[in-house]
Image 1 (cartoon, helix red, strand yellow):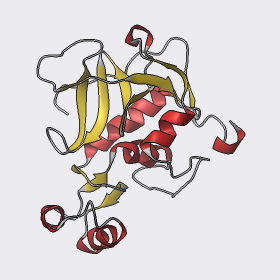
Image 2 (tube, helix red, strand yellow):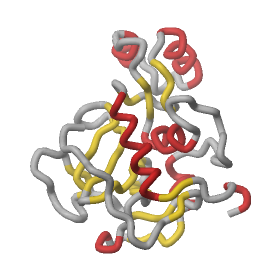
Image 3 (cartoon, helix red, strand yellow):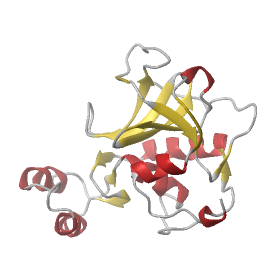
Image 4 (cartoon, helix red, strand yellow):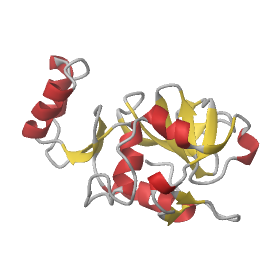
Length: 191
C-alpha cells in the first residue's frame, strides 16, 4: 500500500466526486483523464497514440466544443483522484495506471456481485468502471453514448432506461477507504 500513498478519500466521497464529471460535456478519447478537447490537445494525443486516433476519430473530436472534457475508462478514476477539474498529474499518490493495472492492484476481488460496495472498481478485460450504488456503475466508454455515463450493472439486474454492462469482477481500490455502511449518493437516471 505504501507505494500507492495513503487512503485518499472515503468511498462515498469518491462517488460524489465521480458524479461531478456530469457537470461537464464529456467524450471518450483514449489516453485522457479530463483534459479539454482543444484541437492542439487532440493533435498531441494523435501523435502519442496514432493507432487509436484515426483521421475519422480526430475529425469527430475536433468538432466537439473546446470545453468538452475527454476521458477514457481509467481516466475518469485517475482524473477524479488527481483533483478533477483542477487536475494535478500523478497527485495524491495515485500513479498513471491503465485499466489492467488498476484491476491488478485491487483487493478483495470477487465475481459475486451480491456483496459489491459503493466505490468499488468494476472490471472486465480491457475496461473498468466504478460501482455507484443502486445497481449502477459509472463508466466512460465509446459504447452507447461515447462519453461518461451511468449504466446498469447487469450482474445485479437490468434498470429501465439504462444500458447494461455485465462485468467479470469487482474489487476495492487501495487508495479508497471503504466505510462499512455507505449509502449511494442521490443518483439520476438522466446521466
